[in-house]
Length: 404
Image (tube, rainbow, N blue to C red; front, side, top):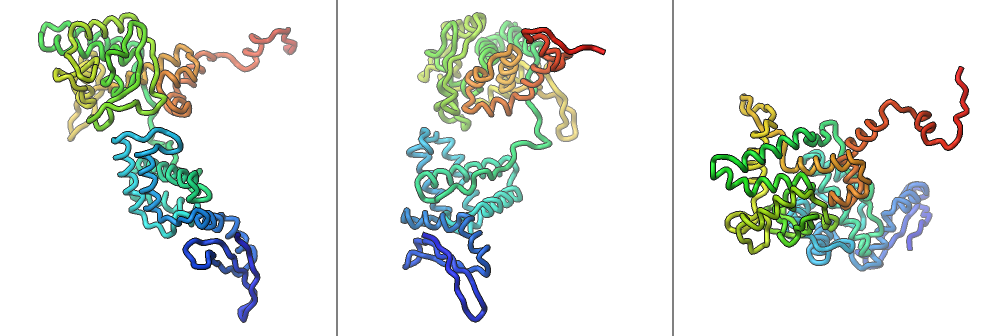
């Protein structure tokens, strides 16, 4: 239990705060202040309470110890009741942990205050990119939350301290228009019917991939890991993906990624025809395997066939490289996912339904990525209508305002 005691000496009155501390023999530590106000502020700051929690749990971890414990929880149990992370995610977490450990932490984890986290944030922003600083700080807060849940600290002092995701340099997603999407499909059709036998043979596989990506909004990793057993004439089941490292097929990015998506009859015909007549055998039951039966490389899919389709469709942009103006594909495979979302928005699909079809675990993700498209669709629908006009249309009685 913490308390404040008034002390009188040669230098006048001081105020001593006594609070539990597991490191001392007596089980208590002391802090002395010139005024009662300072002593009370120390208690109210939570530092003494955090020290008391450390004494109660019998542990007083250094920050690097706590990070190691958190990594093991992520690997073996899963944080906060979630599933254990994948091998690739764990590798990323370990890299982020190395950045956390590179900081000169001046206090044990139970003694950290919010000001310490703010200083850590400043250090991150001064030494790393804004994106990386945001990721590291977010994971540090997750680590602190896990320590709080397990009783190693009283409160998560990192709560509410973050690096803003918005930036004046951020650009909203610009999906292909309907005309551009049709041009891409037409390009895939032409390549699949090329007089060059090698090109035509390759596009027996790539053509249904482009159709399916645009028709379902699947992530590229989900498309390349799609099993044949998950394809029917009416829908696709998404339950696994190629990890970003490209070395392994694992579960989807989040549990929310497990979903069923309706597909168009023409897309189903293309995909099923390819499976039945052209797809190589695959020990992984893949719809679109390589000749060896393994999954395709995401980078190869983006840089070769998809880029070729963009160029064939005339969907290119001019960029400067090494002092020269060159043509580059205007879109990437992920832009077909954005196109799918834009069409759902255009069709006024319920926002929760969009979240589910996109495989977003949190609806804020849907709003952050596609909020500007939603606003545009609503603005287009309401163009030329004021509030009173809309009230007139929805009113069940007579509009009584007089005109002058």
